Image (cartoon, rainbow, N blue to C red):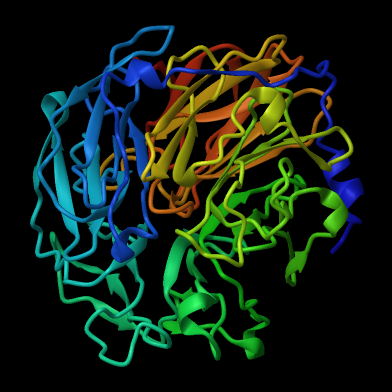
Length: 512
């Protein structure tokens, strides 16, 4: 590491006064109860997607149902936070949902993962979804992770699918992990997938240009409960079409991997990651030579319940970075919950809200914020659902109702939300980086990705806390390497950064 961790993170300190996070339970405002249910094939999964499917700027929620129906909740554009149940295709066995713009028509689509055949859904007007086709082979596996990226001038994204246990292996389930899949386009359709072997039971995968060499690699976080031995976290190179190994400087740990969160915390433009697991939640600090495990003193390991008398190890699932108090420092939410009745791990396992302090360490604040629930949490999302500049929270639970929390934190800092857009096919600018400068703070770097977390993601404006700043400067490094000029953005608004030329120029436009 080039700097000691505490020193690097302390550089991010903002001047805004401390605000105690506070959330209000709004699950009743969903308009219907939703539960992720099912047996063995739904011990894992339970993802949630947050995205605007009707073009009004107010994000909807789609939640996987497992053995229950999946649900779409339409946003009613109410500042108090209110939704109504919408129509969602009748798909069985859904484990996760990822929102993305796939076919380049400017209307968001969905990748739906299932235990038994994945599906691409084409988005249409007024949140209508129909099968997309495009030659995509959904297979018949037990799919539990996905990520998308764009390669070169392809007309469709490259899609990676992470599969869990091979249900057809008579010698399983232990040491019976299925192979993973890489779906690359051929013109306007997909050919047969390339199988990525060996597979070690992926529960989270993410395409990211983690070393800033201009090409995204695929990180796979794997569950050693089923690969048992001989496996590890993996990194697959798209450029070289192979898994990286020790000879490449890659030495992935062997953990009970379940989720990936990625965000640059040190201001060097390289994304740190958190890997959720049974036991330690691993914070890894990025450097030019790879990753270094953060010290325990950073406060993010969250290896046991922070309240109650159950001292057994925790089980982490979805992890998400987000600045919940807008002080300019990213905080971390981790969804927790026992797999089912696993006796080695805690049953009363509250979710974590780890708030970053000025010295770069993190402090547990979930109980004070009111969100330290102990159901078996799985997927989650931090997103501004009522457009008031504060990140709200959605949590999907296994065999318990989905949670919806409105962020009512007082004395928050300023904020801005930025949405890069470019011409088709990659209209969401997946693979781009946003750089944001504000007075008295290092540059903030944010990569646009699809994937990570646990079986779900958020599509929409990228939220930045600004502390005491009234304005900031932003620019976009587009996926093809073109760099936009710096533009001034005002605090307190949602702004689209629309690409206008091959050189990367932008114009500012309001979001509806």
